[in-house]
Image: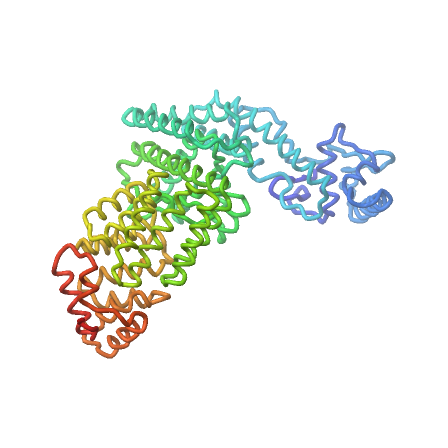
Length: 612
């Protein structure tokens, strides 16, 4: 007996399992006939199905040619598969086995679930090249029927689960179904039941589980109302993908599956099933695959000796929304797995809620958002022409939306940046920056951006403690917002805490590895005040535009006795700002402790800058 495989790959094999040379259209015809009532179709209907994008005459001709090719390549056993007698082409099911039979085979529900789930995961006739609209439509209808069959088996199997292995099978099948039917409350309820069963066997975490589940439900209630289904943003949770099959890796994978189930409570987010997530994790070009699957959010995880590291990424902007590390000690993992999963799920659901609110607001005000993005792009260049062009873009955004908080934060940043670059100490610029930051906070008090700009302004106004407080609040609102962490680090430099500043700016760089020049400039300053002058120069060397750091570079070179390089950087700095005077500048720059100002003065004087 020959065998027709339709899942994972379309092919015909002999009784030894060897693939037979058979036309692709003929294989499609075999599968189509198998799925048809009485396993037969008229020649005319088959011709229209296989070549529906050609004329009737050409379709009939193509079918005759296909039948001729089949007859030319058949053996005696092959001839028993199909009967080409007019007016029907008929499939002899007794001469052929088809993997589709598994869908109709009776048996214990859990065994059925395993077999059918495996088929559906592999996909019915995937990647068919010789296709038409009629064939594509039929394949899609069959896939939907297969999913509905799996759903029926899943519901029956839920009452027959006996051990952890079967429970894991049920959960993976349920997540697979929920990816296809995100609004199916019955599937969701069964999945949540499996999580509750698991937690009940570990009483020490059951209370935490219940509390976290309640918080996720509250997040759901306040989530922006997005239609569930293809239009809902998609989230994929990528497992660690450890090369070695260690106990830690196995538990980490199970933990990510737990989180996936918890996040199914968020009906306005479509969660990608674990099987698909595993395929994405193994792909060498994850970004392309993620884009192809229209995925908005990634929870990327890595396993190391320090534990499980997880970070939530908003794919369209490649922004890290949240990150954390969890200890994965072998002795506590079995009992702590669900607790860690609940913490992860709770944190992710909160971040999704906030980011979706921001995304929907921006989509509702596209002109303002576009102008803001233009201005934000210009602010990456630390020079006055770009800063002033950015200011115009932010004002343009407010023309479209007078209460658009991000535009106020952008305006505040332009005024503090201009104050810094001109080195003239104009208090009016800082007052305007403070006014814009306060307007941003008034309109969006939960956003870290406004508090960040207020903190930066307070620093340059000399209120170092107020600056540290404002930036600490900003970082608590967005603990993984790299720009906020950078600003906090910059303030800590002026608060005479250079080691804390360097630790924090390194964290910002780790979150934003292709670091903006401002990050590197801050790191150079922190290194200088730790008297690590070579390290300061290394950070300056990494800057694309070194102009803002010419003074710190000149001072660093002078402190290590490299007078030639010190002179070079001093000359560059003086060309940009011929009116620069050391004492006047140091009177403006706030340092909490006197030693810091003396160390900077010493370096600048040794580099040859004018004293007055």
